[in-house]
Length: 261
Image (tube, rainbow, N blue to C red; front, side, top):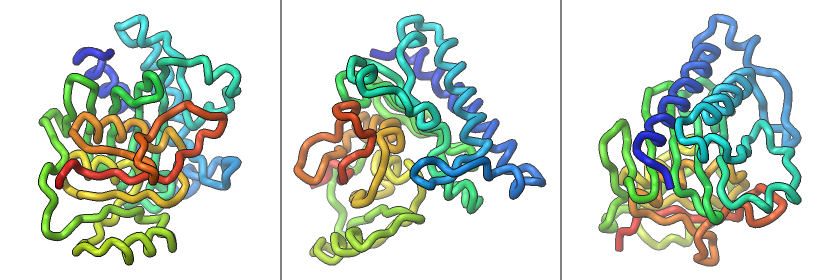
């Protein structure tokens, strides 16, 4: 579906978008530059979101693989594409130019650039770049998963104490109830943005219950990394999390975990 060369090109696009984000992040007038407007769901939109969006959009159009370059793009910053059009797509790009905008505004470094390739409702390739730490996760079906160019795999054996990753900014009563009923020794690992899923992929966490709202662009790229690393991302009914199956772009609640037994 995607070659090593194409994946390396996507990595370069993500890094270029990340550099643009960091120019704003490190600017002396950061406080004046971050707030542009509120999105329809009242989440913040910044100049960094918009700059990264334009870079990724152009970067995909310049891919050497013409078929990949010409695929439709669905980005958080261009999500107004009608369902009548979108439901015809079999393969497309799903992009979140800046995931973890609240973490970006807090300046804690836990935000990412996300580019995913969706095929038959599944994420078959993904790049997740955390520009504040220059950390790059990438994966593709058949190529495996990598962190900064080194192969990673999800934990294959369940530890005595589960490491449960949770949102740094979106803790919910549902999550607390889930933990209360877990009945296994566990410790919490707080993290922002799509990095939560990446922790599963690199065996830095074992379980990520997402019992709060996410959109499809929030999860797709890191979902691809988890799958390529040998982990799973399933809905609460045990079905694989899928994309572009309905008009709404909201994900159902899901649980990501390593393959460890």
